[in-house]
Amino acid sequence: MNRLDKILAPVFPGLVAERLRARNVIQAFEGAQITRTHKAKKQTRSADVALQHAGKSLRDQSRKLDEDHDLVTGLFDRLEERVVGGSGIAVEPIPLDYSGAVHLDFAAAIKSLWGEWSLSPEASGELSRPQMERQICRTWLRDGEALAQELRGRVPNYEHLHAVPYALELLEPDYLPWEKNDLSQGIVQGIERSSWRRVKAFHLLKGHPGGTLGHGLTLDTKRVPAEQVIHIAYRKRIGQNRGQPLLHAVIIRLADIKDYEESERVAARISAALAMYIKKGVPDDYVEPKPDANGQLPSARTFPIGPGMVIDTLTPGEDIGMIESNRPNPFLEGFRNGQLKAIAAGTRVGYSSLSRSYDGTYSSQRQELVEAQLGYDQLQHDFIDSWCRRVYRSWLQMAIVSGALTVPADVDPRSIYGAIYQGPVMPWINPVHEANAWDVLVKAGFADEAEVCRARGRNPQELKRTRAAEIQTNRDDGLVFSSDFYHEIYGKTQANEQAKTKEKKPAADETGGVDGGDE
Image 1 (cartoon, one colour):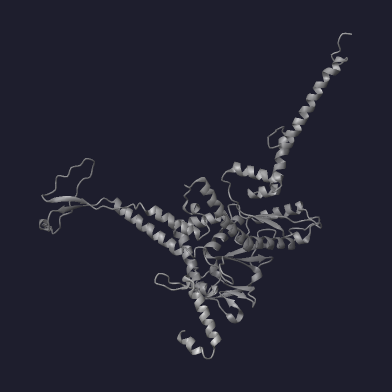
Image 2 (tube, one colour):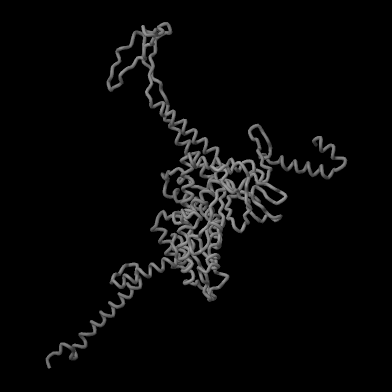
């Protein structure tokens, strides 16, 4: 027992026994012991307290790396491509009628109005919806969070760009100050919550703290109700108030790689500059150069360099030596690749995608693609849940309230907001094999056509409409392709019937048909 246990033992023997029992349990694990080689660093603070001291620094470092580090720029570029993609997160409305079938007319009306709004959904009108989603996704993963204020209906000094009075004002997380804390009002790091931790409001700065108007000198904030703000955050702990950057665990490694590569580049440039020196036999042979009549020291001796050159201007006892360098370092690539694998493991990105190295076997490449896709899918679902679904439902609500969209009487009100959200899908490595696999699953009844269509990033209803129009055009123009199965079967049936008709004609002729015959 330690001194405290000895003091408490006469008065609280049960408490001391519990302390001793807990101490023995802790010491039973080697990982809990502090040794010369194991420091056993601990994190005992809450998520909010830990980020209060480190969140802003992590965010600023991640931004700087994205500005200056090619690996980080490529990492976030790839995450944009795999989480959001060039076309953005596709939304397929699926309102139902009272029989449970998709109301195709109402779904088409929603889709048409949604496509028009997607041309310029944010307040400035400069970004399309896919561009907006990519910027939000990058900010969310790089800075740890992103914000948007919803502009609904009439807003002072603002004019909506579409028939649906709904727009988004995009905000960087700097507008949500870490220093805004008031426990009496439930405000922690700029977010006001109830006693059950439900968000009530956001206290946003009126200007960017890093802007040119001096907003960083004051905490001049405005209270915005939670119903008007979308806050997407990358959280890692239960009860975490603010988000943390995706690079939080690999920032030091990335900075070290950048510094190390820069040192190697400088060393390689130095080694590329040929340097020679004249070596004399003994120190006594050295003669200190004397200035000339003008007081100038003689210039260094130079030798012309060329193939097959002969230097015969050396004095007795002199020799030419070269400064050798072992650069470029042959071990640089292996070390760098090992570091990149560790970075890929901590950022949900595939190593090949991060390093842009695709020299593995087909099996290893496919396995890596499948495993990396799981990480992309998780980020994609988080992005849809926190951003896309909220935006679509708010927009649809305003479209109905404003009268820009009329709900048919036969639509089930409970299904109005139903939709399928489709992001980038895993690309096919071997299209023939995968197409055959889908074909077998559909024929066996373990998959449907819509599932195959969505697996290729297409909207099933749009595909059917374009396919029907294409087939009808081909039939009108007399064109028959192998993909037109009905036309092919129908054509064969018609040809068989015509052949049978021709076979019956000679029999009729023998009894006095068209050709007649001798009477």
